[in-house]
Amino acid sequence: MATARMTIGTVFDTVSNAAVAASTVLGSGIKAVNMLDKYVSDAAEKQEIRSLVDMESFETRLQEEVAMEDTQRHIKLKEFMDKSPEHQRLYQSNFDRIAAVLAKRKAA
Image (cartoon, rainbow, N blue to C red; front, side):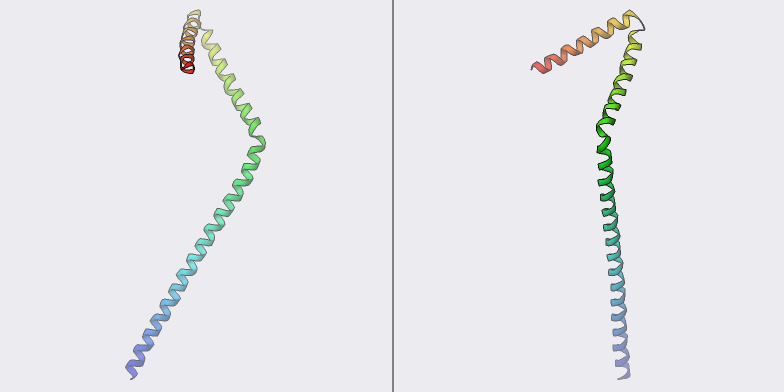
């Protein structure tokens, strides 16, 4: 009888320990999910704020960037064309050839 009680007690202890372990694992899982949810929520809020600020100056920055790129391209083109009349002639010839190809494509 004592052996049966000890065996039953051991079984209950094992079940109790397993329940505690399962509860601990479940609690850790819930904490992990909550941490992930907080991280994603914070990231979404930061992105919303960043987007709001970015859009405030987007058009101005775009105009500045494109104007700067175009200016640099024009300066580089001018420097190339100023090298010699031959550079100018060959450039214009190739420019006209490419323009004709693009015009044919648009007409098609």
